Length: 181
Image (cartoon, rainbow, N blue to C red):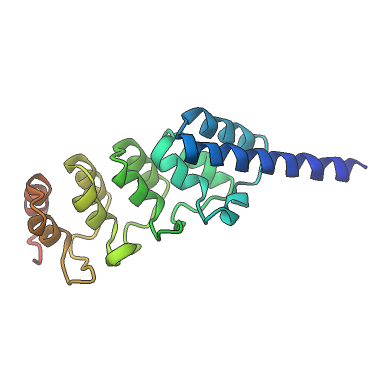
């Protein structure tokens, strides 16, 4: 009887977690992510979201969450490098949402900065194109590969120059050894 009750509790927590996450997507409300974090702290299975458009809690946290959620979700089994249905990683989502606090949290959690996403962009390419100069600095200083090339053969510096991201281009030009263009 005790095992059945535990399983029912787990299923209820999983269902509540899924509902909380759906509301976060629809409404964008931080309170639902906080509820999900509480449920995970109580033992809910974070991977239940893999069935929902492969959008795990990391992507929700990247856009709507707080940095303290990242290690909690990693501990619960969420993949810090997991891709969503659009092939973006959580750090890419944080960058596109202009969330330097979350970019730092993903770097601290061990995100793979070399993982290529859409257009064979690394996190540094995404930061140059979608992010802010502050986020470019965070990713570059964390080891983002300034020599990585996208599907056109562009390095992050070349991408910054092509799209007139002058502050990011200036930072990359001055941030270390000579860069390939």
